[in-house]
Length: 387
Image 1 (spheres, helix red, strand yellow):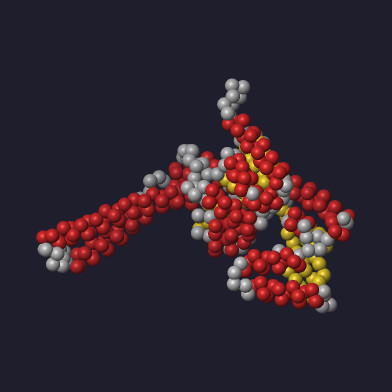
Image 2 (cartoon, rainbow, N blue to C red; image 1 turned 180 degrees about the vertical axis):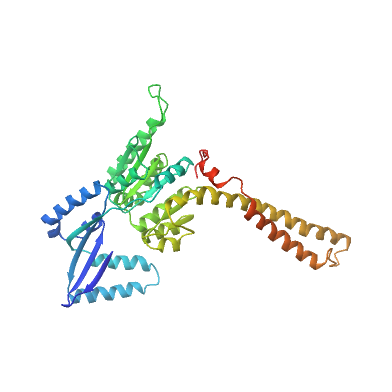
């Protein structure tokens, strides 16, 4: 995120904040070789290992001619009819370079109540969990452990390579390892060891560009218990959702987020859920459903969602039955009346039947039809199903 400001001395300054991997690519050579950068990188890594969410801060002083030329190009890009967002992003890249690192931030992001229980409940129901976050790998890993996604018994496969050959080899080795563990062995006893993949955002870009590597990655990702993508941009989050939708058209995707950076991901999924909270209301306004806390995902999916699906299925069948009784007698009466246009019933009877049989069953379903009580339904052991 960048802003351009003019101070009281008429100096034009570009100020930028972002992930360390993103800001590092935009720093000048002088700043990269300075002691400030090395010390900041060491401190940020230590903060990330403690589970804090970190950002780099940088700035750059612009001369007026450079600013005026760039501003003209921005205005032209904003007026473009086709591919406007891509053109604006390309112009932004032109000025976000050769910056100077001025500091970093680290904050503690506490989890809401019952996050781990909700995730475990969803996983027990067969929901495949993917976590797409902009945090560092160290931070995301710590959050994964605290949220119950990862545990000490899991085998963690980390993918951070950006070279195509190295990436192909690494993902291929992961698939070979998963294949070997999938084969029954007389020497292996006890429960199957859980697997998780942790992939960096820079690696995801390369994976998406190569079809063969993408298929290898999807083959591995669909066989592990958890996929954790770190340092991904909002656009990458949406691209991952689109990738899953296209590769597995029979699967239903659900995205849940609480901030503006999750909006694109929420819009691309089949079902989008936004959490109202300190991050603002952008996610909730763009979502199909809005909830106050993450723990409300459990009753939303497994009680209200299930009941709505069941009721709608029955009501669709009911409407076919109602319309059958509504139309078929009149059709057969046409043979008796020689298709003279004579109605079988009075129009008032038709209208009363249609109103009564359309409104009353729906009201009854809303008020009385519950297959299970809410508390019992939340405590019952769910069968293994992949959603």
